Image (cartoon, rainbow, N blue to C red):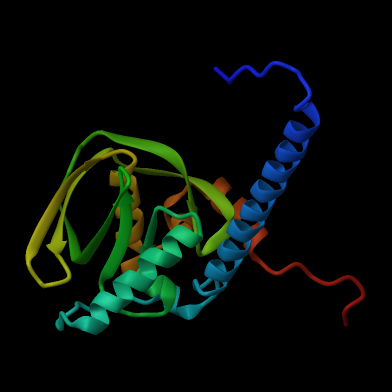
Length: 203
């Protein structure tokens, strides 16, 4: 419930404050949008060959790897995403970051250790295919294992929506995109959006 304010001589002052608050909110929204556009410009987009390449196993756990994970996590948040794979920033290493119930996580050399027989289809979007959302069927629970940034073993037992996120990011590391996992009609529609449109009058 909103706070109640009595109308008195401070009405005009309150109105000015309200306008100031709205202006501040508009500025914050513009900043968020600007950050998102900058972040998306740093994320490889559909058509970039690196998105179709299989990433290599990480063998060296060093400061460079930690910096990469930090940069990817910041990009993920700035782009309003919940997951980001190294291939999406042009790095062919088996590493992705994701957000799980508000916690930022990093997984190196990830593998699905266990997946439920129960599956579900939901629409998925992708930071590398900005115009597209398509239905993708995936197991609703997974156990995903790998290493942390120091090379130590880690595993996560995940349910939806995090289970879907990690399967999506793992696909990226294998060069697989959501349009490869959807039904034929949704794939056709997606490709129509992704293909460059002919310019009228072009020869």
